Amino acid sequence: MLMLKRKTAGESVFDAVNILGMLLICFLTIYPIWYVLVNSFNDGQDAMRGGIYWWPRVFSFDSYQAVFASPGIMTAMGVTVAKTVVGTAAHVFFTAMVAYAVSRKELIGRNLYMTVGTITLFFGGGLIPYYLLIRDLHLLDSFLVYIIPAMFSFFHLIIFLSFFRDIPEGLEEAARIDGANDLSIFCRIIIPVSMPVVATIALFHGVYQWNDYFTGMIYINNQDLQPIQTFLYRVVAQSSSNQMVAAMPGGISKSVTSQSVKLATMVVTTAPIVFVYPFLQKYFVRGLMIGSIKG
Amino acid sequence: MMNTIRPDRPLPPPIQPASRGLRARRLLRRLAAQRYLQAMALLGVAWMVVFNYIPMYGIVIAFKDFSIIRSVAEAPWVGLEHFKAFLEDEELPNVIRNTLGISVIKLVIGFPLPILFALFLNELRSLRFKKSVQTISYLPHFLSWVILGGILATWLADVGIVNKLLLSLGLISEPVSYLAEPSYFWTIVIASDIWKELGWSAIIYLAAIAGVSPELYEAATIDGAGRFQKMWYVTLPGIKGTVTILFILAVSGVLNSNFDQILVLRNPLNESASNVIDIYVYQTGLLNARYSYATAVGLIKSVIALMLLLAANTVTKKLNQSSLF
Image (cartoon, rainbow over all chains, first blue to last red; front, side, top):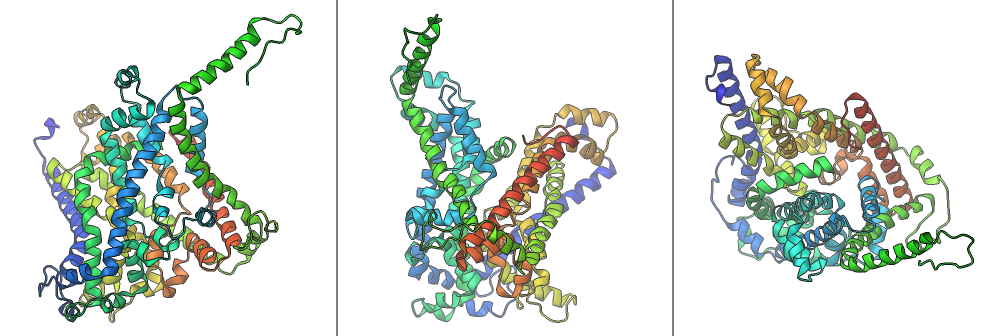
């Protein structure tokens, strides 16, 4: 764009308005989150008076202490971390493995397998038959309900597939001559050279695992297997955060309110993802592109 | 599978049967050689059979009177009874109005906005600023609806910041409990959805814009085109294919009201505006245990969605050459 160096007056106005508009969008995006953040760092009782918009008025960590002292919240956090780590590892490995197999042209039945998968993109059984299946598989009230039914996605398979297609065949050839089987070629050669797509799918699925509250809500009754998002759903949608405060150890509860604990829990729940995604940004842009065009 | 050569066959072209047997043997040998590959692929197929195809078979309970104490096979057939019951249900007009209302407005407003955002983002001269705006705009996509529901509940409460702002500006005379008022529900759902996904949805368009040839812009500049003219005559035609495909997908998803979102934001007070088809299926099926009835309602939805996809695909194929399939 070298020829645009000399700007006319109209161009300058356009640029200025455009930049202002973008700044406004950024403000509207960040401010609601900022508001939660500063209120969670304010003394709970004091925050009830309102008027905390830009910075905490009476700075306090008490709400966070209350969150970390609550056994219920900590158990739910543990479930979320466990389901995200195990679920994402299983999803990425399994989906990539199947994708690698169908990416190989010599695979007998390849077109049939692809057709079987493509149909699932356009038609499904719906909520009730799926619920009955989960029940019949004895996955109700089991940690595995977070892992096995989420282990595969044909949509993600397509994204893997288009990456695997670009891997030069010579790479696998050397290993094959050494007598390695296809599974070990996949693990030792394909996975290491596919880190960009692995990171993309891991992010997509990791975010799903971290944010999903519905699975924990309808398939799980046992409180100890409930993830933090389901816990928060009950707090947010059913306004049961008074029980959160009631369950807190004494001493702290003077300066915290159900609202401030709720806000602190929201911050703690969101922070890990918000810190991770900017680092993976360069990967997921390409992954999304392929997924949307070829899917 | 192997064919043996039959000697009594009149005038056998001797090569054919032999080669068929040979071919079968070769197939088996090839299968044996790729046994690891087959196992890897078939594990995926098995997963799909269990988690995608068995629920599809499970749709038969829409035509039966299924109850939790009996197996699917034992349940008596009732034909289209559940479908008739849905058509006569007094909630039906409400469910249709809410589902279509929210989705169509989302489509009309929410579909073009990310395109516009991408177009204007592309016009920023500072690459650093552009990257920062992008990174910030992705942020809300990574928040769960539960968190966003919590933020909205805080903001829209009668003591919340929205009421304070509107009161101090004199736009309202007394606080409104927005989430308890059905008349505000659609606006809240649509606005918060745009807030959450604007930046994320723009990614694909930005990538498509990056693929437009710079020579076209240079040619347009030489022809004296201004910024808006270049957007209109170069950038937009350049991303037409991407827009088309995403539009087809958006149309076919019209009946998919954002379930996660509405489940968080709904409450008994706003029910008349928040009862969409997915919520209705969830409520009648899982909460009231009317399994067969809810499956029938879900089936109607899937069939219409499939027809919408095919229709949108056909129409866009006629209008311009690109289509999904």
